[in-house]
Image (cartoon, rainbow, N blue to C red):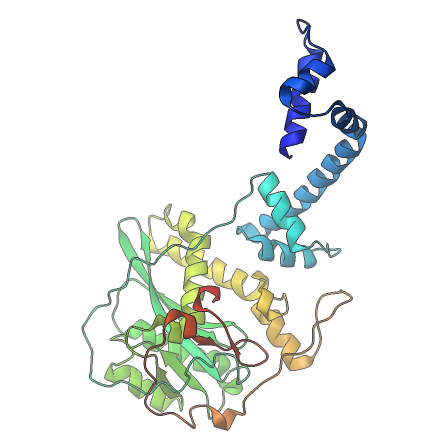
Length: 358
């Protein structure tokens, strides 16, 4: 509602009061608005009421999408959830954001990660080359696998989550939750990956991580070698070299933070993680994945079958590089870029973006 509408509504309410002695002319003059504008506003009342009813009906659809699967969403998430409803609901982002503002529906915002420090035990001097160089989406599925560890606070202590993420499809391929930071749960994540995804992995597949103590440990290097997987590492202290994995953890924590706060036992945390991983892979729709969930996107790019019944079916993403090119030109990493110079390589090719848009 704009300022003039607010003034006209006040004038209307004042005129309806029993003790009012002022005329329309006097009230409009006092408020600094025209009588013609006031009468035009009155005449448009039925139209405004009809628009209000439409807004409320559309907001009910938005609210249903917002609550779908039990996880809150932003405007883009709502837009994609509406498309996955039966029948699909097409609503543009501008309208969704307008109605979210109008009815004060807010989405979760990612906060900073306060848990940066890792245990120093098991650390070696081994640091692998950065074979990836932020070309996250250039090589197709099962070529670039990102891995990391995050801390999950609950009941005055922590659980520790190790994951492996496909950089192209954004699928969560394996994960292990642990009560301790011993290196074993990181090794189990790799074993689980090979057990579940081994047939789809390639000779050129790399596992990319930061330089944390788990990934420089002898046992981790040995298991990658045994499983015929190549190792790649980010530059020291440069989280942008593993951006999709960091982004996954950030969004996950936004969704489960309130639930973790209510956990008392480790098994309760495990249940929440299992539930979120199933939701993420199958119903966490992503704009850059042709508005599909990761598993849906993988099916789309491997079969060419788009699962949504919509008129504007997106084109299949272009795989910009050949598998044998991955790491072929590896050498000393360039100097650290300034924030405005970082390259991010998106689905369908390599494009430059400001780091603030990752």
